[in-house]
Figure (cartoon, rainbow, N blue to C red):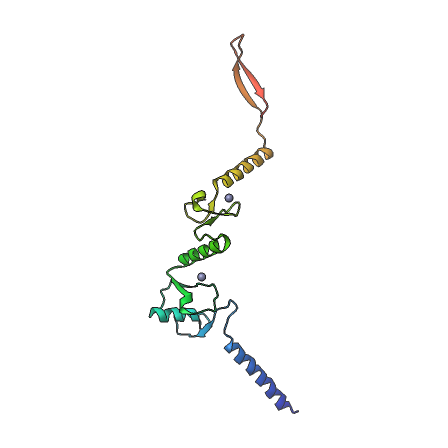
Amino acid sequence: MGKTQSRFRYLRWRGFLVVLQFRKEKDGLGYINVFRPDHPKAGPSGNVRKHILIAEKTLGNFLPDQAVVHHVDEDPSNNLPSNLVICESNSYHAFLHARLRAFRDCGHPDWRKCCMCHQWDDPQRLHITPNGKSAYHRQCNNRRHKEYMRRRRLENPRPPRTYNNRDPISGRFIKEVRENE
Ligand SMILES: [Zn+2]
Ligand SMILES: [Zn+2]
């Protein structure tokens, strides 16, 4: 076997690997990419995720900048039009995923998770912070506050308190020092 022949074999093997790489359908996250460098949503390698193209075909226009495409069955390679939902913003997309997670974990899509005891519960029984980002039971919060106060008392105990009491016989004020209960 001559030197030229072995080099040729090597190049053919390299070429085969390059073709394999180009033909690779899914990327590391399971999305299917299409080479479309002129597309507004193309990444640095010139690839666009296929579900974006399918959603745009259904919409008949380019997607707005903020729009996100959601996969209903959460399989990023299932790009059937019935499996795609166009969300107008990422926050709506996050809301959808929160509902999906709640439904999968406890069977109620509108329930929230208490951030202190990590149990799912009806929002009626939870306190939800004004920005809506976290929810907790009042009892859980009270318990945590009590625990915090107890630890604080252990770490820096208060000095014994003094009381001004009137002596019943002489009528003068006397100072009484009592230990804390
Ligand atoms: Zn999604
Ligand atoms: Zn709780």
